[in-house]
Image (tube, rainbow, N blue to C red; front, side, top):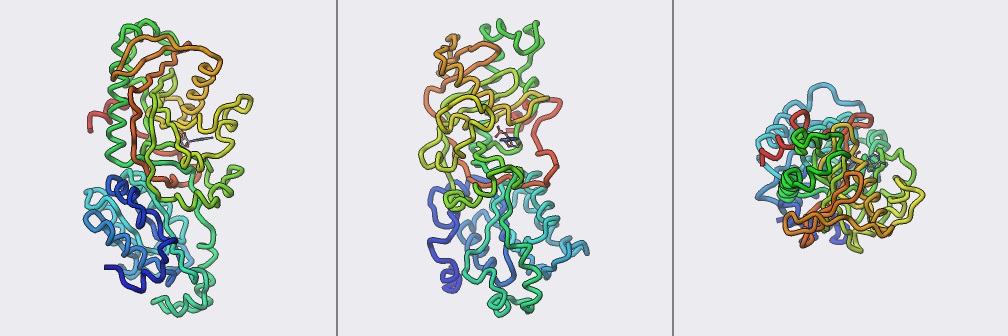
Length: 401
Ligand code: 2AM
């Protein structure tokens, strides 16, 4: 049971959704999550960490820097003090010992954070960075009395600037829970396989740059897939893009951070560049959708808000993920001008239509629901986002499932 002190420190309304929201709790249980507690010594990280561990006790592992006697210091830690902790962390992730991994540390050092983001991306964990909401979390006089390292006010003041600013991710997104993700990848795989075998498709290969119908293997052609499937809400480039700081500070974004959401997929589409799933956002989800998301990529056109919402399933070797949303908007633009796709059959019981230029859309007979967690993608600025796939294409990934 959580201690009375911990309950008092984190009033109910201030607790993260993964502690208090039932739908989120169900979703987290189906996901792989690395929770990074962040804050000054004495700010209440440990009680929050323990509370999360208790909530997910069957599937959680709490690893704390205190346990390894790692004292927070302003200087980047390079003396090997993390070696033992990292051994436990790596083994826990690699051997699937826990699906909710909680790290209790100050996490003030950028280099250290980047190592952890790298690990999370390697093992496909969704990262959630949580800070205690205690009223004294930045009050050095109070922290002095509360921290067990016996840090002076001066020492705490030296550490504080590294923790005052929120970390802005590369992008905010709804990330699919593991089981749902495997499922959707399998659907994408089957869709490509069935489409590739259709006569109607083989007759319309020109846009794919192949004349010979035997030469196109869609599962190899679409060589890359995102590391964790997601629906991007806001691309921030770690705060460099205009409007990203404001987005990160929005009350709704802060409140929704680490929350579970069900996304509704209405159709699958494929173009010579990308394979995607069209997402129909609910009102609550549209609240997290930036007003300029459509204009950002197609400034001259007008679309209903949320039109760009999608999950990139796969892309051709030389195509960036961002293209999927553009392709979806191109398709919606065709529909807006009254162009109806040519009905060419059914896949999974849904209507398959062909538009010009190698654009295909499969309207699903029933909307597919996928459970997601709203969070950020974190990595090292300037370093390419890891992808799945490679020379063998996404087929190799699907066979694993
Ligand atoms: P996606 O959401 O269409 O898949 C990293 O590049 C991630 O950010 C990708 O998932 C990518 O595409 C998404 N993204 C959204 N807007 C972007 C932009 N303007 N530039 C680059 N990537 C963007």
